[in-house]
Each structure stands twice: as C-alpha cells, then as structure tokens.
Length: 326
Ligand code: UT7
Image (cartoon, rainbow, N blue to C red; front, top):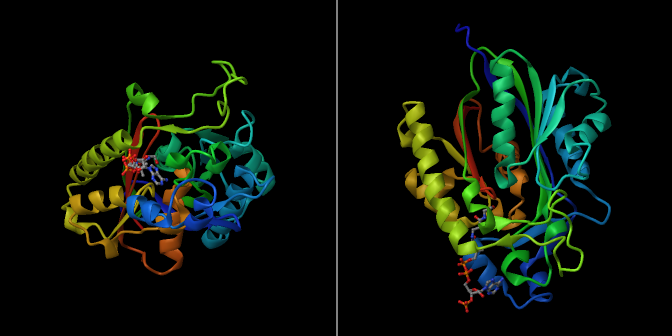
C-alpha cells in the first residue's frame, strides 16, 4: 500500500429542472429550425429552470443524490466547492447557500467561477485539499441557470444553453482516484465569450439586454476550444505516461457535438466510448461534465476501475482536464 492520498469519487448525483424546451419550441420564438440546431450543435432539447428555481435549488438536489450514492452524511463534509457562473446572489456564495440547506454548517464552502470549466476547476481545487491532507470528504458541485442570461430573441445564442447541476462526493483513499488535473486560462480572449455586465464596471440599465446577454463569437470560440482541448488531452496523457488507447471513457464538456467529436478523434476513441448528453441537455456550462458523469455512472456505462478523462473549455478563456481511475 502506498502512502499517497488520492481523491476517490465515492458517489455522483445530478439534477435537471422539469421543464424541457425542444428545438421546435425555439423555432416558434426565433428564426431557427430543428435541422439547423441539431446539425450544427447536436442539441435537440434542453431543460429550463422554473420561475423562482435557482442555481442553489439545482445544486442542492444534485448534492443530495451524490451524498446518498456515496453513503455520506452532510455532517461528514470537510469542504464544499461549487463551480458556477450563475450564482443565486453576488454574495453569499451559492456554496454557502447549499451548505446551509444541507445542514453542513461549519465546513468551508466557496464558489469557483471559471465559466464552463467551473466543475473541472472545482474538482482540481478539491483534489488539492484532499492530497494535502486538509480535507478527507469533499462535495464538489457544478450548477448553472444559464438560461437566466439568455436573450430569447437572439437565435445565435439562445438555442445553445440549458440549466442543470451535477455533483460528486470525493473521499480520501489510499488506493485509487484522481490521477492528475490540468488547468489553464487565457484572459486575453475575454471578448470572444462573455457577459459584460458586472458590479464594479457599473450596470448600464439604458442599454437593451445589457443585463442578461451572453456574447459569443461562436466560430472563433469553436476553433480555440478544439485547439485547447487537443493540447490538454496530450498534456494529460503525457503527464501520466499513458497511451491514448488506455482511456476507457471521455466525459467532455457538452457545448457542441462537433467539438466533442474532434476531441474523440484526437484520442482515437470511438464515439461509443464518449459520454454524450448535449442532445438532451444543451450547454449547461459548469453543470455539463458532472451531469454527463452521473448519467454514465447510473446507466452502468462507467464501471469501477475504469480510466476516465474529463475535460472542459469555457469563457475566460478557461480550460481544464482531470484523469481519474473511477
Ligand atoms: O461552452 C463554452 C464554449 N462554447 C462553445 O464551445 C461554442 C462554440 N461555437 C459553436 O458551437 C458554433 O460556432 C455555434 C453552434 C455557436 C455556431 O455554429 P457555426 O457553424 O459556427 O455557425 P455560424 O455562427 O458560422 O453561422 C452560420 C450561419 C449564419 O448565417 P450566414 O451568415 O451564413 O447567412 C448565421 O446567421 O447560421 C446562421 N445562424 C443560424 N441559423 C439558424 C446562426 N444561428 C442560427 C440559428 N438558426 N439558431
């Protein structure tokens, strides 16, 4: 037995709001079609939070399921890290709101904002806490209500996003778990994917949609995403001395099926070994990777002992990966 500490995934959970919006529903709102959306993105439908349903609500439900799957009580948690770019409030953090609702008061809790890479960033932070011995049982969540900042009159972006949350419970383990995480950012590409509204820059109430709109130069983001994900996949394999054929499952961020296919090709991985949920969830930002992971675990696809590669790319730009033995 080694004296190394790993972060092992003890349980996963996820939650999607009840309401489903199909491509045909969107075609009634803007000049688009199921054919265009499905062929360019792979998306067929997405879930949308009900009025009054918040990121904390989605996160709490996903967390409860992950705790149950792990057989862990909320009172046992040493830390809660939550990836989101759509927090309920500016402060307190959504992690604090979830902590209180879970009845886990006392342990540290904080949010990580890395846009769509939020869950991978949060997972990496949690892994560092466990490896250093600072925590043994950690709840990691990715949760978003991205549709709250969608402009429903703007066809180039409103067809892409959805709401949802996923969570994992990590436990310190001597045998197996997260092998490595890799994080990157490039703040120089800010304006290709952003929401320019903020507290410190001041609100601009007279500008139409200034308060809600996600701005994205889709084509450019697409190219940067494919390139960055190619590079991080190589970096992750190399850091672990692995051949690409050793990966059992790719669990990617779900933004666009064509980006996912490009990464799978890089890994020489057949699509049967890639977890795809973008068709039913759309892009749920931080929620997407843990939602896909939970679905793959609960459907019996992902088995204990298998090697999983998680990756994400998002606004910032930010991108990251995690390689783990499940
Ligand atoms: O999660 C964070 C990271 N985000 C991403 O990774 C997103 C990356 N980008 C993408 O996924 C793709 O660029 C999009 C799905 C956003 C767009 O696909 P595209 O193939 O790059 O299309 P495009 O923006 O080049 O637009 C092609 C055409 C344009 O018309 P013209 O100029 O060729 O006449 C658009 O006006 O498609 C038009 N178009 C639409 N048509 C019907 C744009 N949106 C729509 C729409 N329905 N919803």
